[in-house]
Image (cartoon, rainbow, N blue to C red; front, side, top):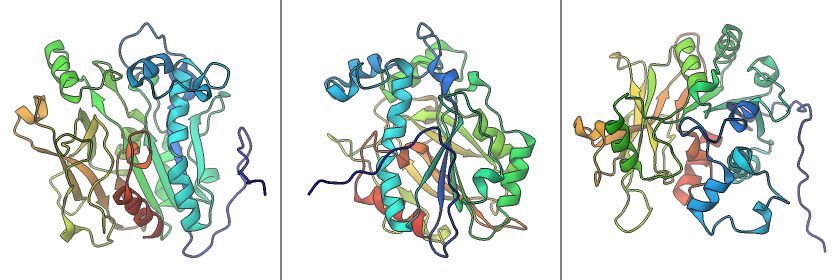
Length: 337
């Protein structure tokens, strides 16, 4: 009997998903402008994604297969953007199986140049909105006041959950020696000496009063001789919802953002998990005395906001850098809490 594969769609109007009690509807929103990112000048050293050629050279021989050839796969920066889409498939499959609902994926500006702001068209059939902040600052993505208003109104609906994932901000300093130190710390040749992400998510956080700022790109500590992360430092007494129940680690990624809390109001946001830092090479953050960075945060419902707000890096939801049972347990928690 022939196996049946699910057909893929592109450039079609999304069919609204009906509400079913206990069956969350997930939507993923990539904050980038796909054309602006993919059309970046590849002779520019900083603030752009790698080309597929660069990825192949660094990761050789992982992508030396026919499916990544010029006959089958987009080359240049566009191909690298497609790797992010492909890396979400396992998360989409697992959440879809748990919820009985397909996971919708949107882009702020897609391959065809169609711009899609966050509004009722996205939010009306969404219970969990995941905003992945992989837009470079140079592409000038910013949430309009109407988008902030739409998200604020949506969060008044009981059971909603907004997951914000601003990515790293590498090489902020004008001191080139400091940038060199950051590069030597994370040790990923595909990340330039300056790669600043997340203007869109920053504008959302400012508009919604989320007291967090994404900083640096820190290499997490691993068990010696492997890429298995050292366990999260969890603050279980603050995790009343059990977001991290049964979760010991996320997946390895060589340059993760520190989610700096920008308020002294302890009731505004809860720091649920930190990640030990790889101390084998110096970094300005560790030189300042830090040994862990903030990895996972939660803002429970408050005032007229009935929904939850979580902060977690987008790479936690992809398979580009591996995964295990602990990571999938986290996905299940997010899908079922």
